Length: 127
View 1 (cartoon, rainbow, N blue to C red):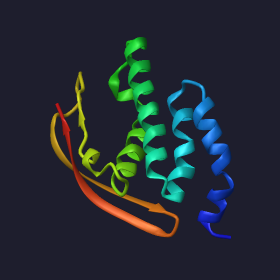
View 2: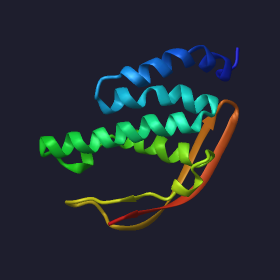
View 3: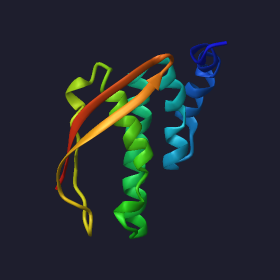
View 4: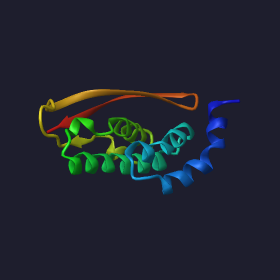
């Protein structure tokens, strides 16, 4: 049994869960694991965009440090942008506050979707 076959078995549940997940960043992100394994980049990006936005809102409302945001969903979001139809979105700009280093950084992203390994370097600007 391949990873793709196993992921395919969870696709229906992942799609349902992505529509009903609680407004918790990591819960919103979880269906993207299935979407990513199957190469469903638009669905992966959509769940991670929602997770990242919720994460940003949560820390702002709680008055917490922005370093507590769900960067795991941001990582998956960037990865989903790379091979998908949203190539124009593969450069992200983040606004931060506090002691976050600022500047432009080269970030290497490596991941596996099914049996295919993707690797790329993108520029991330933090201002």
